[in-house]
Structure formats: structure tokens, C-alpha cells
Length: 173
Image (cartoon, rainbow, N blue to C red; front, side, top):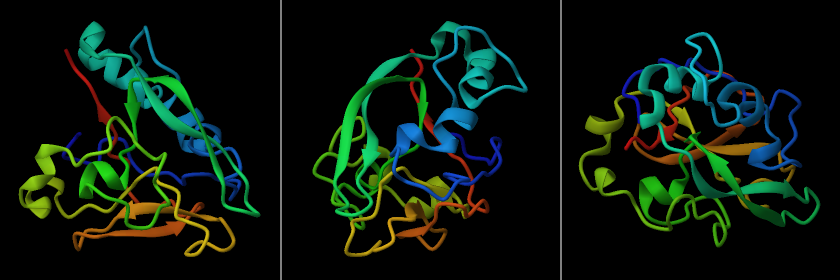
């Protein structure tokens, strides 16, 4: 995960809709982009990472939300090929904080060992978006997405909030 805000900030979904899940969001389709096979320093995050790391940037399967029933809050998931992806609250905290989370597994349903240390030292003071969808009881209008706050906790913001940094995870080998 990059330490700086090299990728800028963007709204999770500029249409203020979570109905397409993470896979249907503006951030996933326009900012992160499909897995890249060619680098482009001015392109999507995947293209920028491929320009930097070439074939060392790995493509792998990850379970991502593909649709959300905004009435019930039920979330559907599917396996998708990714290179860069936003973190989940489980990968930072080791548990669900604001999401229902049974299926919000990310790469694995455990806290990354990196986050066993002082999070403020590792994550800096930047606030950044996560991809965990807050549960219906906390998100009655289903128009929020989770985020990591600079104070060291998980919260949620409106889907159109474009002030939080993008700090995706990616795998090199």
C-alpha cells in the first residue's frame, strides 16, 4: 500500500448509488480500472502501477461486491480478477466494524500483520476510502461507504465524498 497520496482522491460513486456494489462503482471502473497489461503513467491506477512495476504487478482473484439491494441491504458477491483494490475494514482491523461483513472477506478474513503495529505510524495521517459497505442499520439510505479516519478508526462517508485519499493494496512478485 503506498504511503503517500499519489493517486489523488475521488468519490466512491459519483452517481451516489451503491446498487452496483464495489464492482459497479465509479472508483472501481474509472479510477482503478481493469487489470492492466500495458503501463500508462497518466492512466488508471492499474496502468500506473503496471508502468512502475511491469509484470511484477500480480493479477489475482478476489471476492468483491457486485450488487446491493438498497431496500434490504443484502449484498451479492462474485470473484473478480484484480491488481489494485481498496482495502476492507477486516484487513485493517481484523473484524467488521460498520459492515455486515460475512462475505466482505477481501483477500482473507484476517487482519494483515502490518496493522498489528502502530496504525498511525504505518498509515500516516491520511484519511482514505475502504470498500466495505456499511450495514443497513447504520446506512438506512444505502448511500455510504466505509473509510479509515486519520484518528485511527473506521467510519463511513457519503458515496459522493471526494476528499478522502485513494490508498489501494496491490501484490508484487
